[in-house]
Image (cartoon, rainbow, N blue to C red; front, top):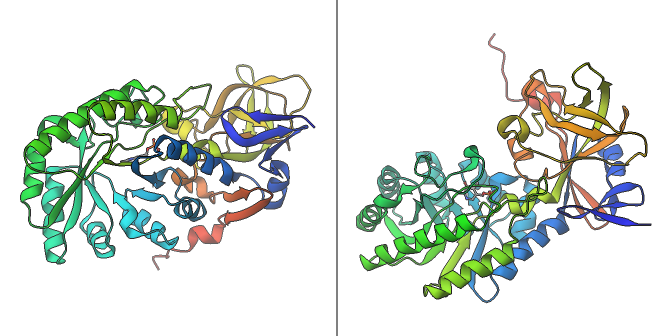
Length: 425
Ligand SMILES: *Cc1c(COP(=O)(O)O)cnc(C)c1O
């Protein structure tokens, strides 16, 4: 039997005439659990993590999985067991880490709008670092820490003002973005933080954007951040760690992002040259750890030929796979059992009543109703962004580990969706 790996998807392959995730047939999983179904490969996630670990070999570094990419408990557990910390952006994410036994001290809390309740809870459990995004947040954090009789460990997220050359909605390190403290304000913000009674300055962080496929923005941002480290430390405020954020892209459509280990070899060459190579580092990768470790298996419901367009209507929709509707993003779509017949060009669309509910445009497919398709690169920013629009229950999720499949999320039922609602009278 010939094995053809899926491009960009380690541990997903066409074996003979059928797609497999590790040792299991996607078709069998779909029959057992129904569709739409997210299928993840544990080995893929660990392989993506290993690339970072190779890049950090011999260095002091902590990898904090940016869990907004995929915050399902079964996925968090994989990273917690592999020794990762977590980058969180809400109180809900904090509770999820704690629920899988993640250590509070390995949590860093990012986000421009932390509420007082979220901050109090994070102080209470003793997280490792607050990545503060504004001068106003420093004041609130210090007040709450003093009131709780604690000292909050803080890092200031700096905006290095470099262009990550990605989609405007996922670029975060430019001057016009809402994220971080402006480069020019950084020293003043650190001086204020050092003077506040409830804070202990422990680090500096940045995160310039997402789906970055070019190494130059990283190298530029590193120089800008190191300039700030020098300025802050020259003012007598030592920085224990440097957190370089996440953002490394994945191959969705033949993109060729740098490999994590190769990128970090280059970044460390710069760090060594500038005398910072022996510092404590942190990174916050999300998409690059889970994105190509997951696919969404969906069934073709109807084919609808038209004058201008042919439509292939599937049972997954924008509520399951929101990236095309949100960012005109591309997901490759392949048959689970490729057929030999002639291909037609289709717009692949879901059942939701919105013209924005498309998953792929102008795709050549040889399919018939009842066939299964796999929407690729669906491990990040799909289930974590999924909604119940059109009163659609969220899909089930399966984590494949070698020859075993673990159902890590049951399909939501109509009753699940109505559980927290009350009639007015
Ligand atoms: C989203 C986010 C990340 C992860 O970004 P990816 O592109 O998924 O790697 C890291 N840090 C912060 C602060 C984020 O908001």
